[in-house]
Image 1 (cartoon, helix red, strand yellow):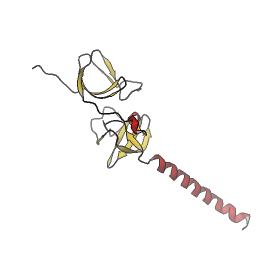
Image 2 (tube, helix red, strand yellow):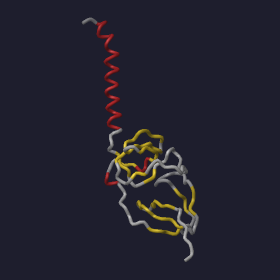
Image 3 (tube, one colour):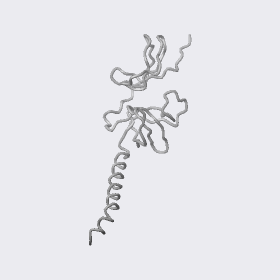
Length: 153
Protein backbone atom coordinates (compact mmCIF):
# COMPACT_ATOMS: atom_id res chain seq x y z
CA UNK A 1 0.00 0.00 0.00
CA UNK A 2 1.38 3.41 -0.86
CA UNK A 3 1.62 6.49 1.35
CA UNK A 4 -1.41 8.04 -0.35
CA UNK A 5 -3.74 5.21 0.72
CA UNK A 6 -2.63 5.38 4.37
CA UNK A 7 -2.91 9.15 4.58
CA UNK A 8 -6.51 9.05 3.29
CA UNK A 9 -7.52 6.53 5.96
CA UNK A 10 -5.69 8.17 8.87
CA UNK A 11 -8.37 10.84 9.60
CA UNK A 12 -11.09 8.19 9.57
CA UNK A 13 -9.11 5.93 11.91
CA UNK A 14 -8.37 8.85 14.24
CA UNK A 15 -12.05 9.87 14.27
CA UNK A 16 -13.19 6.33 15.09
CA UNK A 17 -10.59 6.00 17.86
CA UNK A 18 -11.70 9.32 19.38
CA UNK A 19 -15.36 8.26 19.17
CA UNK A 20 -14.62 4.98 20.97
CA UNK A 21 -12.64 6.74 23.71
CA UNK A 22 -15.31 9.43 24.23
CA UNK A 23 -18.18 6.96 24.29
CA UNK A 24 -16.32 4.81 26.86
CA UNK A 25 -15.72 7.92 28.99
CA UNK A 26 -19.38 8.98 28.92
CA UNK A 27 -20.60 5.43 29.43
CA UNK A 28 -18.44 5.05 32.55
CA UNK A 29 -19.41 8.51 33.80
CA UNK A 30 -23.13 7.85 33.46
CA UNK A 31 -23.18 4.37 34.94
CA UNK A 32 -25.64 4.22 37.82
CA UNK A 33 -22.92 4.06 40.48
CA UNK A 34 -23.90 7.35 42.06
CA UNK A 35 -26.21 7.30 45.05
CA UNK A 36 -28.46 9.83 46.73
CA UNK A 37 -26.92 10.63 50.14
CA UNK A 38 -30.31 11.31 51.74
CA UNK A 39 -33.98 11.55 50.82
CA UNK A 40 -34.66 14.84 49.04
CA UNK A 41 -37.20 16.46 46.73
CA UNK A 42 -35.89 17.26 43.25
CA UNK A 43 -36.26 20.66 41.60
CA UNK A 44 -37.52 21.23 38.07
CA UNK A 45 -34.83 23.91 37.63
CA UNK A 46 -31.79 25.20 39.50
CA UNK A 47 -33.88 27.30 41.88
CA UNK A 48 -34.19 26.62 45.60
CA UNK A 49 -37.53 28.46 45.65
CA UNK A 50 -39.18 26.24 43.03
CA UNK A 51 -42.45 24.92 44.42
CA UNK A 52 -43.10 22.19 41.88
CA UNK A 53 -41.17 18.98 42.27
CA UNK A 54 -40.95 16.25 39.64
CA UNK A 55 -40.39 13.69 42.39
CA UNK A 56 -38.45 12.65 45.44
CA UNK A 57 -35.33 10.53 45.74
CA UNK A 58 -34.94 8.20 48.69
CA UNK A 59 -31.64 7.83 50.52
CA UNK A 60 -29.45 5.23 48.84
CA UNK A 61 -31.25 5.41 45.48
CA UNK A 62 -28.99 4.90 42.48
CA UNK A 63 -29.09 7.79 40.03
CA UNK A 64 -27.62 8.64 36.64
CA UNK A 65 -25.96 12.03 36.31
CA UNK A 66 -27.34 13.67 33.16
CA UNK A 67 -25.56 17.02 33.32
CA UNK A 68 -23.88 19.34 35.81
CA UNK A 69 -24.32 23.08 36.37
CA UNK A 70 -22.26 23.49 39.57
CA UNK A 71 -23.34 23.31 42.27
CA UNK A 72 -26.48 21.80 40.66
CA UNK A 73 -26.70 18.37 39.05
CA UNK A 74 -29.46 17.04 36.81
CA UNK A 75 -30.08 13.41 37.73
CA UNK A 76 -32.33 10.65 36.48
CA UNK A 77 -33.67 7.76 38.52
CA UNK A 78 -36.05 5.59 36.55
CA UNK A 79 -38.59 7.89 34.91
CA UNK A 80 -37.95 10.74 37.39
CA UNK A 81 -35.56 13.52 36.39
CA UNK A 82 -34.70 16.71 38.26
CA UNK A 83 -32.04 18.96 39.77
CA UNK A 84 -30.45 18.82 43.20
CA UNK A 85 -27.27 20.27 44.71
CA UNK A 86 -24.32 17.97 44.02
CA UNK A 87 -23.63 17.59 47.75
CA UNK A 88 -26.58 15.19 47.96
CA UNK A 89 -24.80 12.68 45.71
CA UNK A 90 -22.12 10.20 46.70
CA UNK A 91 -20.24 7.32 45.10
CA UNK A 92 -19.69 5.64 48.48
CA UNK A 93 -22.66 3.89 50.09
CA UNK A 94 -21.03 4.42 53.52
CA UNK A 95 -21.81 8.16 53.08
CA UNK A 96 -25.57 7.59 52.95
CA UNK A 97 -27.10 9.35 55.94
CA UNK A 98 -28.92 7.05 58.32
CA UNK A 99 -32.57 7.63 59.11
CA UNK A 100 -33.35 9.25 62.44
CA UNK A 101 -36.62 9.59 64.25
CA UNK A 102 -37.78 13.07 63.22
CA UNK A 103 -38.29 15.54 66.05
CA UNK A 104 -39.49 19.10 66.51
CA UNK A 105 -37.03 21.78 67.57
CA UNK A 106 -37.47 25.45 68.47
CA UNK A 107 -34.89 27.76 66.86
CA UNK A 108 -33.13 29.58 69.75
CA UNK A 109 -31.76 32.50 67.75
CA UNK A 110 -31.82 33.78 64.18
CA UNK A 111 -30.08 31.17 62.03
CA UNK A 112 -29.05 31.14 58.34
CA UNK A 113 -30.58 28.46 56.07
CA UNK A 114 -28.37 26.61 53.58
CA UNK A 115 -29.33 23.97 51.02
CA UNK A 116 -26.39 21.77 52.03
CA UNK A 117 -23.34 21.84 54.33
CA UNK A 118 -20.49 24.09 53.21
CA UNK A 119 -22.63 26.31 50.97
CA UNK A 120 -21.34 29.90 50.86
CA UNK A 121 -24.53 31.95 50.78
CA UNK A 122 -27.63 31.32 52.88
CA UNK A 123 -30.93 31.25 50.99
CA UNK A 124 -32.87 32.75 53.90
CA UNK A 125 -32.89 32.94 57.71
CA UNK A 126 -34.93 31.21 60.37
CA UNK A 127 -36.22 33.53 63.06
CA UNK A 128 -35.88 32.87 66.77
CA UNK A 129 -38.87 30.96 68.11
CA UNK A 130 -39.60 29.20 64.80
CA UNK A 131 -40.51 25.52 65.14
CA UNK A 132 -38.81 23.19 62.67
CA UNK A 133 -38.95 19.44 62.10
CA UNK A 134 -35.46 17.87 62.06
CA UNK A 135 -35.38 15.01 59.55
CA UNK A 136 -31.65 14.29 59.11
CA UNK A 137 -28.43 15.08 60.96
CA UNK A 138 -24.88 15.32 59.63
CA UNK A 139 -22.19 16.38 62.12
CA UNK A 140 -23.55 19.71 63.45
CA UNK A 141 -25.78 20.28 60.41
CA UNK A 142 -29.52 19.49 60.43
CA UNK A 143 -31.91 18.99 57.55
CA UNK A 144 -35.20 20.59 58.61
CA UNK A 145 -38.69 21.45 57.39
CA UNK A 146 -40.07 24.74 58.63
CA UNK A 147 -43.78 24.73 57.72
CA UNK A 148 -44.83 23.82 61.24
CA UNK A 149 -47.06 26.06 63.30
CA UNK A 150 -47.82 25.36 66.93
CA UNK A 151 -51.28 26.26 68.10
CA UNK A 152 -52.40 26.73 71.72
CA UNK A 153 -54.09 23.75 73.37
